[in-house]
Image 1 (cartoon, one colour):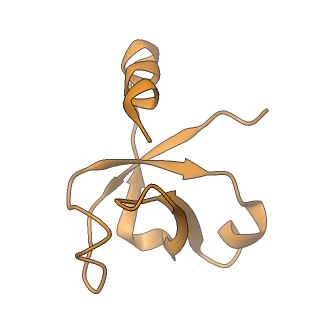
Image 2: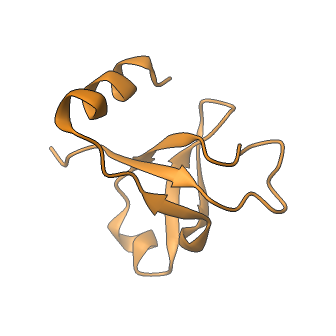
Image 3: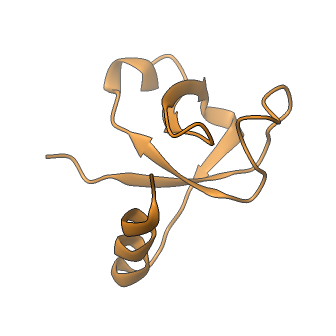
Length: 74
């Protein structure tokens, strides 16, 4: 199983209802979409949607913080 990744939203233009700036989101592995510059992100609706990769940066958290965020996600 692939490690669940976390991303921070750095741009929500056009997606203000679905994404909050500076919020941490869970990314769902989608290699085929990544090659197209897209990320599958679990957004405010608790559903996963494709967003441009440039709207996010990967969150680099200590392991304990990473686990804690994933426990509260969804």
